[in-house]
Length: 291
Image (cartoon, rainbow, N blue to C red; front, side):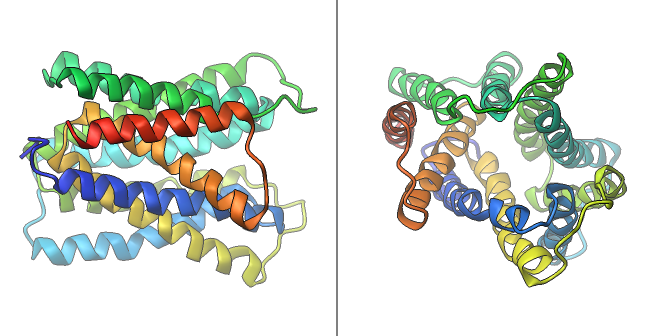
């Protein structure tokens, strides 16, 4: 089922990249309009509910309920959701131009764990693609140094922790798909996402003015639903493809689409480093797709 000759993994990987790429291009709009990112998480957790219901319907009541499946499913959801909140905290105390390169290590974690524990292998062309896509992620996370100042070293610890959590999430996604139904993973992710909501509310600064109009939660819901659909596609991508190939592809391609959309919509000219990352990401994805 994980044989990359089955091109289902490519369809779902590209679907994830498109959805997350569009999501990335618009996600800042609600926050810039006065709707905090932490409340954006709350809205996102609500948008995954229909995804969870879809998974439950597709399961026809045959949800994997054994202890291992529940553990793996909840682990995937908690690692992803908690990682988002830790990222918010890291960005509060550390500069984004340093935080995101740290987090871009996540696919490396997935790749190393999959090679060591799942014994996944790839051809020479695929390994070239893996290396190019992984390096592209570092370049695509680049942002010119601004006026933001870092406060202490906690943001470094938080950023590395997020990278570890998201890298481990990718590994568990593949492990879980090997022993349980993909839809069960999606359902348990929904439960885990909702469990983290109280922490997101606690982290929200309600002393500041919050935009409760459509441009806030309403627009956030539409945009965050793209993220939720992207996760659904991601689960299937890991189900049918090797983690060492899917992980770098779904992490490298979304920023490329985000940059292109930003160029078209906001007329933002990307930095030469970003352009280099885009070329490497596309080249790497092409090699991976033809592995």
